[in-house]
Length: 396
Figure 1 (cartoon, rainbow, N blue to C red):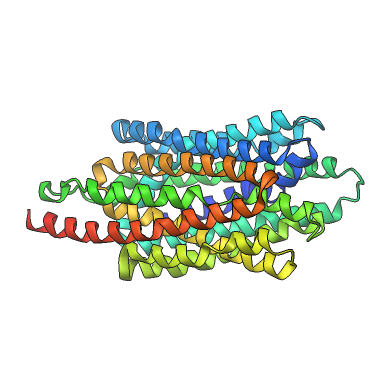
Figure 2 (cartoon, helix red, strand yellow):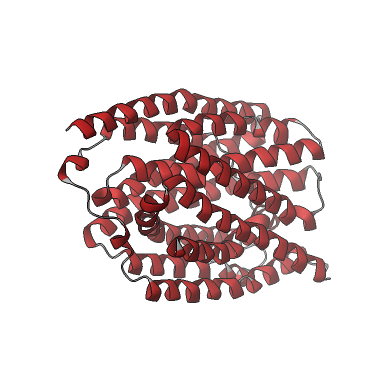
């Protein structure tokens, strides 16, 4: 539990950095000259690269067992790409998009290795609870980051909004450096986290491919229909639903909802298993209707809250499910496959919905809701298969 909490604190400080940046990124890219389609493409490409490379980095982590080196290298790239945005000149939206992809590449390097060493401890403490605790701390950082950005923008009296954003990115270098120092401390204190979980007995190493395949298809549909927050902040700014200085607070609110949802659904997962994802997906599905279909601040707030519910379940229960379904010896590869499928789907969905925004907002909303709802029956089938495979494993 000490390891889980310490890695949660690392995530907290890291999220102050990149979630603080995410709270203004949509408006920043638009201000730098990017269109809605370009923002959707860049966001989706970043997610695609950030997730698809995990297929490779997860495989490498399983083969080499170099979990810590890959985690540290990934964090270095991930965190330092954010303050580098301060160096982008006005009109340099293409360079900003490249840095966005670089930051996601860092996440691709670190995530399978980090999630795997977390899963070793989580297997002893309860997967749902453990990933929920990490997500809670993670989202406290995701809340503090946008609040920090809000205060910076409030204090900065410059009339040049682009310059104000550049200063904000530069100041995010402080938590970025703090993240690296904390991570190095965690590595020194817990050099061999794989020892938390004993090796599986031969009869427990039965492959569970059918449930995992259904799971991958379900979460791919979920990702396909989930609108990136950069489009939400861009839409909010364009419709003038909120002043630009309060956009970070909107994201902060989503992160607080995310944290609460992660705790709730993490606890429910340990009691009821994968099926709790059906409830979270059902609750989150209408968020696009409220945000993009109704021109009202209260509808925006409600939609962002539902968006946070879906993200909370994604960051806790989705990882816990991989821990439960995939055996220890191939878990990093399992995380890589899961995250790659999720990222490719997120990329396709973000690009498509960013393009639909300029053509038919109704079509974009319909696509988002339909894709998420289609994932629900597949989660039910996955849960059924997983339970059957668990019985087969126990009787093997």
